[in-house]
Length: 151
Length: 145
Image (cartoon, rainbow over all chains, first blue to last red; front, side, top):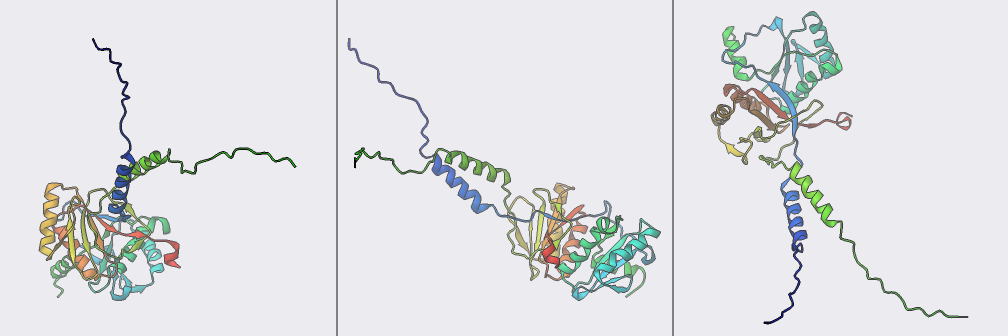
């Protein structure tokens, strides 16, 4: 009978390539992930929008953004800093008064956003929340005009 | 003067790498947790706003570049260009049919004509979308002054 001495083999996990794999993963995540904007101005649309709501000018505050960023509130040209104090006065009489934000198709998106952002800051700047900010589209505006027989 | 003749001790120069694995794994965990694949890579100059709300993950994306080119994504795959307003309505209707409370993100260039954005908003209204986010960057004091 042979008396062979058993050779001790240590069991271990080979970790030599771990650093390579880890660095590859890091490089993959760094290359594919980008620092993207993940926030924005939100607005909710009415639950049932099958019917166009009737908008009476005297029941609402009409904010009209025109080409070049000029803003008219209820037909009067106003600087940005004048808009919220004017709206605050109107909301004192009727806190439920909606604000209708219309934008000229030739104006830029940035012009509209500047005014929308301002309206959303109402609680901080004038201490009153504008309960409804409506952003009608050109099609909706035309529908209303047709409803009132305006060409 | 006595000279002490000692045998110089050799110290091998090396970089301590024992903590490298910890650092690498920490970095991997960070990237895995914060990884959010961007579904739309349209280059736009976003408008800046003070008010900003967090956009939910996997919201549907509609991007509009300065020239008015519209691209859409359900939030799961890369965005694809669409040719007309009707295609946006079809896309949004399909998304809403799948999930009526799905959020839509409008990513538009601040210098684009509002007309393009208006048409997209109209399409979303026709598709009965409920929540819309207008993507923006944070406005800072430097932007004002």
